[in-house]
Amino acid sequence: QVQLQESGPGLVKPSQTLSLTCTVSGDSISSGSYYWSWFRQPAGKGLELIGRVYTSGRTNYNPSLKSRVTISVDTSKNQFALKLSSVTAADTAVYYCAREIGDPWGQGTLVTVSS
Amino acid sequence: EIVLTQSPATLSLSPGERATLSCRASQSVSSYLAWYQQKPGQAPRLLISDASDRATGIPARFSGSGSGTDFTLTISSLEPEDFAVYYCQQRSSWPLTFGQGTKVEI
Image (cartoon, rainbow over all chains, first blue to last red):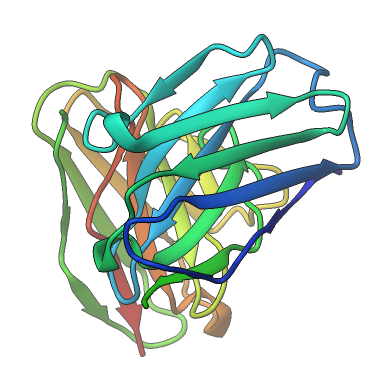
């Protein structure tokens, strides 16, 4: 079965760029016609979509974050990645990657924005 | 964007009881609604997609219904492991959005 795993720095300074990678295992990221998504969840709060990428490279972003987000895919590494620029404390959250709407999800990784 | 409103915010029940959770959309989402379960420290888990389709491995005590703007997740008889937070999510229009969650507590 497909499994996803997020990786990247757990601490990012304000105004810098948050960078995370999601590694897909158990199947090729290119099999099927899936898209791959990023979500986030601040502590004690609800879930927010960040955006998605298709294996063609086509992307869609949440308008609330669009100016700061870049999502990319590397099919040779079976990975997709998230970059969020100009971060502030409000971007502190658990970040999740997932296949499509969320089946399955990665375990999540906490990213704290602090100097 | 489509706003999903879940009710109640908290549901206090006992094992063996029936749980009924509601999700209302600010405009029609047809049947493009999913339900997730999230336990503390864990990622969400897909329970139901397209309003009523149980995901692989999800017990039959979980069922979903509704279409348009009003949806229901029913847990027919609560097991101890079902006490968690439940979220609805719509994929009818971009961006995908979630409800604020319903906590099912003992």
